[in-house]
Image (cartoon, rainbow, N blue to C red; front, side, top):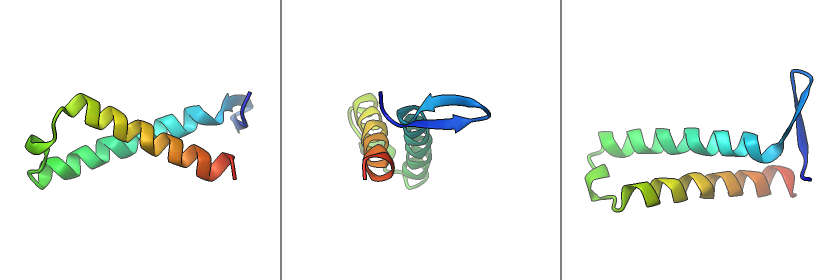
Length: 67
């Protein structure tokens, strides 16, 4: 069991917070790429964006909870 975060009296695993932030950052990154007209060149999109979300999640988890 990894570190836990107290949210309104309930304990949640830290990876849930990191996953939520990773998905949010990926959505913001995608909107930036769409506005910059770079998104059509991203291929395969599902793999790239899923990998980006996982990368952000893992970097956050290691930086905040494993250090």
